[in-house]
Image (tube, rainbow, N blue to C red; front, side, top):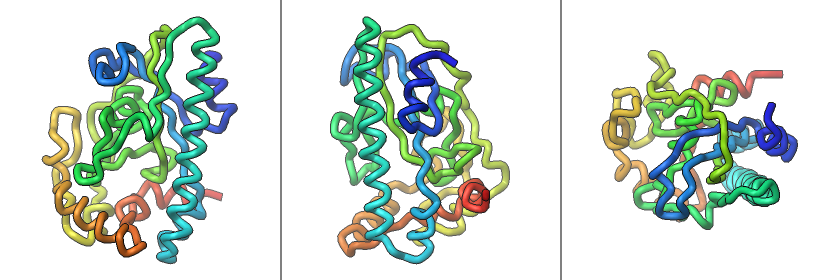
Amino acid sequence: MDEVKKYLLELGASKVGYADVEGLASEFVDLPNGISIVLKLPKKAMQFVDDEEYEAYWKCFHAQIDKLTEIALKGEEYIKNEGYDAFALTMTRNECDMKKLLSILPYKTIATKSGLGWIGRSALFITPEYGSAVALGAILTDMPLEFGTPITDSECEDCTNCQDACPVNAINPQKWNDRLKREDIIDIEACSEYIIDQYKAGLGCTKCMSECRLTQEYLREI
């Protein structure tokens, strides 16, 4: 295992992968390589969803985001100390448009190009180990990296759990591949409108995450 990946895993990352992102990060910095950082959500977070304890869920989720930020910033410092340029793509640097539910450079793009997982019917990132119960971060760099093999097609097979669970029927039957646009698999306007209303009410909507078959398998692991 290379030293950067080893370091990030020691800091607490669940999975780390490398991707060619040349041309995708120009809005930030001219750095061609991406390091995808996956952090699994604690099983108790999904239990909070099942119990509709959304305040506790969001507290847990944002604690994981804070941890991701710390890992990414320490990774940036580590790479710079090795003599290369690096830019931790934290949430504040990669501002999300809540109406579009989209970051400037989607973490999911770097993660799929790294070969760490794929996009589910719900448009959430899916890993074989944790389903969609994950949070994502990234680092951009010019350090030479051995890229993973990009995943370009959904591995959700015939599962429709997330689609069946969506309270506003925003998820389309079409399975993801990297040739499709996001609107081909999800009605993002219907999704974002419902989510924003839920947030305003102090609630949440993570049914597509908790009902994912692979998320359920992760939760059943002893």
